[in-house]
Length: 512
Image 1 (cartoon, one colour):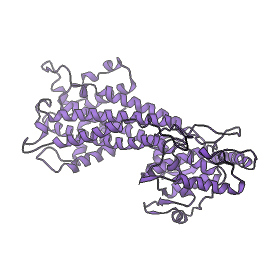
Image 2 (image 1 turned 90 degrees about the vertical axis):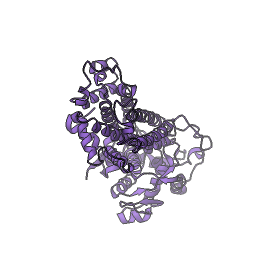
Image 3 (image 1 turned 180 degrees about the vertical axis):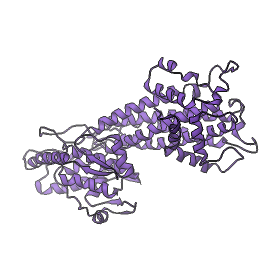
Image 4 (image 1 turned 60 degrees about the horizontal axis):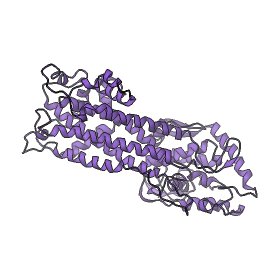
């Protein structure tokens, strides 16, 4: 099993995916444990101070003016976690909870939160045992961080609430911890607050979304290349010198992918000569690099923001390197929420242009000699008519999901928290949007593959031929109508598992 070291520096995007999705083992570094111990001394010194210190000897939020006597402070931390573990709705996916816990652990490891080493080690122990706290869909406003989701995780570390074990069985946290040999944590001063003040949920979902989109955008280039080819489009517009006239990096990368994917296509070559009367292709074909490139540049910006957030130590109050304990507003999720929404807009745009390319295959006025709806016997057979309906329904949903959550705010905590980011909501809808994009791209590949087969005896480019052959391992070629839903699902799995991308890259090398 791979191992991920959690130290005082930032985790990488790959580290988060490895732990969240693939169960990589987590180890706190000696340097991190030393830094945690040092900052804990600062908190312990403040605990006996007659001057109130937020989170150490006071209440929280709008109740911060209440001074809490020493004998009630352990209860204060327990009460904080229990009251904030107020989520509702369906369970959040295991990988999201694991990412959230890892990222909270990463902040604890910086030594800026003032927790004890054993509290941080308990988070690592739960991750390594495969114990996943039950976190619910609703409960975070994305200010003071993802309070309710993080509180459900802290509750499990205390040995309370519900979890799922490594086999996915639902059980009380106390039972799961006992079975794994993990002692529940009794929280001390400030620790409850340190465990729930962070953008870890929205950040974890951003990191995984970026990982998925990097693969999907290259796969969308493959789908577009297959569509350009099968619709007898031209590759001339993707020339490097034309793209250089508008030097957006994403556009150039997408165009380079299209050139590589279409290189050697007998279908494209068949209409490249002086007899071709086509002057310009439709925008959905001709402007693919511009549309796909804009999404790439958006993703690059989102990854930059994710990298900054991974390098952050988010808590309130925070223990500074020179030993001060200071209140701050770094828990506000606005920077993450904005890029989550930005990505949802790009996802909707990529899906929209993919659906338009698919639709062109089905219309005899636009598909250049193919049967209506690519049907074997139009009228008797309907071909891919309703596959495009499915695409269209998803695209319509993606447009609704592109409405930004980050422009919303609803005041809470007796107007103390009077402007919130809604970053958790932005992340949740982006996850749904990425699933939709995967399905839309898969239907385009499924439809374009059928059209490429129907162009025989002309042959596709080596790269698109490899994808066609890969898909045919799971889905039959053209013929009379068949039960279509399983074929669509097979294409979705082919795309989501990265196999379409791998098949193309096996021929032409890594795409940009």
